[in-house]
Length: 348
Length: 267
Ligand SMILES: Cc1cc2nc3c(=O)[nH]c(=O)nc-3n(C[C@H](O)[C@H](O)[C@H](O)COP(=O)(O)OP(=O)(O)OC[C@H]3O[C@@H](n4cnc5c(N)ncnc54)[C@H](O)[C@@H]3O)c2cc1C
Ligand SMILES: Nc1ncnc2c1ncn2[C@@H]1O[C@H](COP(=O)(O)O)[C@@H](O)[C@H]1O
Image (cartoon, rainbow over all chains, first blue to last red; front, side, top):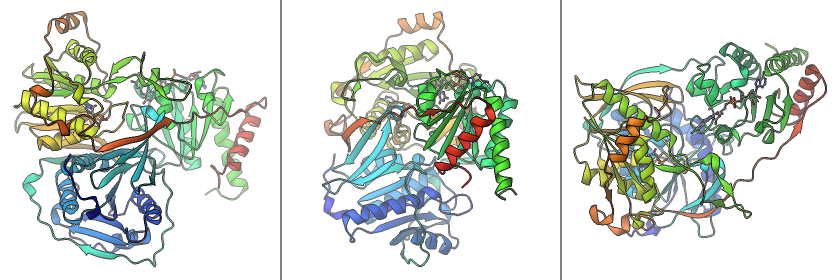
């Protein structure tokens, strides 16, 4: 590894990711809030810096949002070639900025985009990147201690990047605390001119097909997930789960067995070869609780299991369990919740 | 077309055992081909079939000598040749050093490749970083989170179907390029007897430090910028309570009450 002067590297950078409507995504705000906590441990001279790569349009809404959520400074690269995301130019622009400004840390949301370009950046600058962290801390030597689950969530690891900079990590959305935005906060905006070469881009989008989401929410963003497995017996029975999810403002997930049977799409699959989720409430209906399924949902705050087999392993991780037929219990649950909403005047 | 599939042999996470001090037992754990890499192998074979067999698939891995077993399985499934990258000096590599070694081996031994296929994640480390890092090292473009590939011979590109949070994207990728595969809508094939016999007859060359253009300070533990300060078992969740009030309505009502107390519904 090449020797660098660690003293030259300062400040905590957070990559500012936008959604397709130009809104700053949730995980960026969570990271700004986390960066503030790291700053408290490191001292005021370490600034929280948001890094915004964007097209040439108006950025005032975005900078306001970034400042409100904790950025002291915003480094901006505006270029027409950064209007839409490309792996090549976003990693190139980030590498250029790192070389120019020498940040001490760079925190990136572990979204499909963050995980697409972060490894290219860390490889290029020869620094350490810790994937999909669930907790960040500062150790007794002032280093970033990135904490992450491995082996399907069974083993936790604290990872340091001792001799290279920036100390990089991607962080799982929705696990860190959300900030309370303060719109009176101001941040200094540092616009960095940059030349970028269109010929670097070697892939292009041909088509985009948005997912049709029955309940209006994906399992990544939902705070409540009602998941079904082979025990539901057919795709029609998932309508019951959708009804309950809609009533509670949640989304419907599935086990691999339900996906392989063709009852649900793979984008709803929870587990080792699907998605990792950590909602406030996870209701597993007709799911046995295989280790590969648990890998994707055991960090949920509260787990409810409904299964007709009292020995199903899912009960070993559930906070509340009901032994019985999911196709009878779920509609009853939906019905009672509807009644309660009417009784409390919350129904629309 | 020359296709390279990068695979990793991983401990079967369903078979993990713990010692009394909550450290992971490494011995006696079943090894398997990383499930995402099985989709990578399957996708490569499908691509070759779609081209009427006009492709050559090399499967490669960096790992200990026993990782040959995973290569053999890939050969038995239908890959044409294999190579093992193995050296004690490569041990304890993080994703940076792994990517350096894997990319250098591809550069030195299969220089004129068209397409590299990786898995999106390896289920032991779960980082998803080796694919994009190898692409960066080789200065080629990439598409991650792929579920399906097709070859467009008119302009020599790959059409990659990719899943992101909000939907499905079809991307055109210029070659040479790299893709990372998710779980696909098709299953990896099981090797048949003919395949297994062919795999057993195929010679698998092994290359180490001396055969590759690598420096000692960029491989293995020495070349790894990350450092594992501590690892520990995540305390397993404990069993909660069974709700058993006799009839469904009573059960449901008690469950709702509990969930409201926990402030997770109807706030
Ligand atoms: C490499 C690998 C990766 C994998 N990745 C994943 C993954 O990402 N996600 C995943 O989920 N799995 C994954 N699996 C599969 C996993 O091992 C299990 O096979 C799968 O999770 C089982 O799904 P299930 O619980 O729906 O079905 P089953 O195990 O068949 O369980 C069905 C359950 O429903 C109950 N039941 C039946 N009827 C009713 C009823 N009327 N009411 C209530 N309960 C009822 C039964 O008692 C049973 O417990 C993976 C496996 C491998 C080998
Ligand atoms: N040691 C290795 N040898 C070859 N390919 C690897 C190795 N480690 C990881 N890969 C490839 O990189 C992908 C992602 O792995 P990871 O970044 O470790 O999650 C895997 O699915 C493999 O395709």
